[in-house]
Structure formats: structure tokens, C-alpha cells
Length: 453
Image (tube, rainbow, N blue to C red; front, top):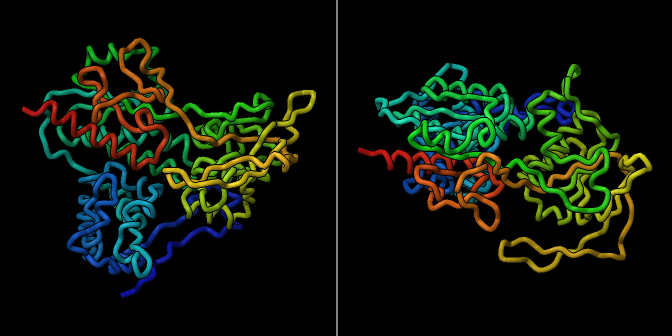
């Protein structure tokens, strides 16, 4: 049996740096069948243990082998509300695929690519999950339409609840629409997944600012339970001199303008004020998304990361794609000061080389500055991609307790207020799409349990 996975087809690097079209094309039927036939159909499937939402992976792959793609979709949908999204952006290499037996002596099964194939088949053939239970007369409000909120909504709708999602922005999807670039996750795919949820009864109200136009108490009067999936959209900065200069942005702002407002289009009404040379500070997925997006806008965009390539937290595949696209990476360097001219425009940075120290409990090496290495670099744009924190405006005038890290305090998925649940980045801090989905799914289970007859 083949120990090497079927390689997916991609746009060439020379072509894709000039467009925002999806980089990976995904498997066709022949490729999906060939990859599915590598699966050993383990009796004790470790891959399922590695999946946060516990998809029956061998079962759906067996359905692919049998060319029963509709059944494969039904198997996936039993566990996941957003398969076309997860197949594209989940870090499978650190989760299900890392547990695959095939990976011990060769390459793991491309579980994510197979999930994407099945989900794409379902979207192209207008398949949707069906509600197996009758309406139970209970109505649930969900605050936030990101992955946690959408996942929770899907689980509850299929269990017979009336579900209404409240979204502050003019489009639903949360980080899926404002944070992840078109070339990694087309917005048409997000919309189709959302449309699938609408088909099973989920209602979505946009432009509603919970905490302002409506409060948590208002929702409690109208709904039997509430789920808070408000995410973590508040960007962090370094607090260094010059950070308030023109042309210093958060990665959130850059990506939101590009992804949600179409700033990459020639007729954009909210264009990004591009520099000629931009440094993106950070090494996570958001940093890689920002640098690749700016590259496509014609900017000489570079990554500056204070640790080495071994500590880079972004997905390996996305880093490889960025390097193929000619994006420079400067490792073991960190800004100390942003240099500005008399008009407060960025002209460069004072930076310092870093040294790796001992590894901490999290397995990551500590870093320390080599002050003797202070030097300057030229640039006219700086983008901070240092992580995000929750914005708890939605909780205004409520008695919901926060932790000492300013995260929503939960017991399981329950907050300090009766019948109000929370999950995702607002509870854990910024994490992955699939972990937010897991939190939404688990909260839905708790809500279902609460209203069992």
C-alpha cells in the first residue's frame, strides 16, 4: 500500500501572488478515491481521538471508497456543522492526521483534503443536513456568528431548537469572513455553509450590537437560553515608541479591510493604505495571512519574528506557501522602536537580535535581547500580528464573571448567569477555528441536556 499521500494541485507561486483566488484546488474524484484507498480502516481509529469534534473519520473515508459521497457527507455532518471550512483551515497535521497510523512509516492520510472533497461535493449537489427531531418549543439566542456560534447553532437546530444568531457586523461568519484571506477560504464557501444552516432553520440577524442596541438581559427575557460566541477581535500591540504613527496597523484591520470590505479590488471603497516595504511582526497564522495578502497587493512584505523557524506557530503548509511566494522571513529579530519623520510617517524601525534561552513548560524556548546588536531597518509600513484579546462589549451591564485574564468564566460551558453559556475565543483566548467549533458543539450539548424532558 502506498506510503505517500496524493499531492493536491495548487496554483503556481508565480501566478497566485497576483490574485486572491484559492491557492489549493482540492482533490478531484480520482485523487480522492486514490487517497481514500490508502486508509487502513483501523479498528481502534486514533485519528478520531485527534479530532476535536470527533468525526467518524474511517467511516466517512470508507464511504468515499464506495463512491457513496452523500453518505460520507452525512457521516461528517453528524459531528461537524462546517465541513467545507474545516477541510480548508483546520490544522489537521497537528490533530487527526498526527494520530494516523500510516504516518508512523510514511505519510498520514490527507484527512482534511478528503473532508474538503466530500463537503465540496455536498455543496455542488445541494446536499444539506436534515433535522431528525421535531421542534421542541425552545428558542435559543446566539451572540456572534463565528465558528463557535455557527457550530452551536447547527447542533441545536438539528436537535429541534429554534435558533437566532445575532451578529454585530453586516455579514455573518465572524473571523471566517474578516480574518482568513480569500485565497485560503473563499467567502462564497463560507456563505454556502451558512446557507446550509439557514436551510435547517437557523435565523441570522446582522448589524445588531449586543451590549448596545440590545443587552444580555433583553435576550434573557426573550429566549430560553443564550450562547456567547463573541470571539477575540481586540488586537494587541507592543507598547513601543512610535506605535501611534501613520502606517502602523494591526493585522486585524488590514485583513478586515481586505477580506470583509474587498480592499484588494480595483474599485474598493475602503482601500488599504499600502506602503512600499512592510514588516509584519509575528509568526502565527494571522501574520502569515497578512504578509501574503499584502504581497498580493504589490507590497514588499516581510515577516519579522523574534524566535527561530522551529518555534514558528503558523501552519507549516501556509509557511511553505509563503516562502514559495518569495516572502522573506527575518528570524530572531524584534522591534524596539518605530522611527517616524516630522509628519509622523513610518520611515523604519530600530530592531534588536534575539537569543533563544531554555524551553519552558509549554515547550517553547524563552528569548532574550542581544542589546549590542541594535540596528535599524527601513520600511514605511508596520503591521502588528501579536495575537488578540476578547472584546466584552456584549457583556455590558451584565453580571457575567470574568477570569483574571479577562476571559469569560465558565463551568463546562455555563457562565455565572443561569441559562447563559459561552465558548470559543471569548473563553479560551485566541485559538483555532476547530477548537472554537468544539466549544460551540459542547455548549450545545449542555443546552440540549438542560431542556431534556
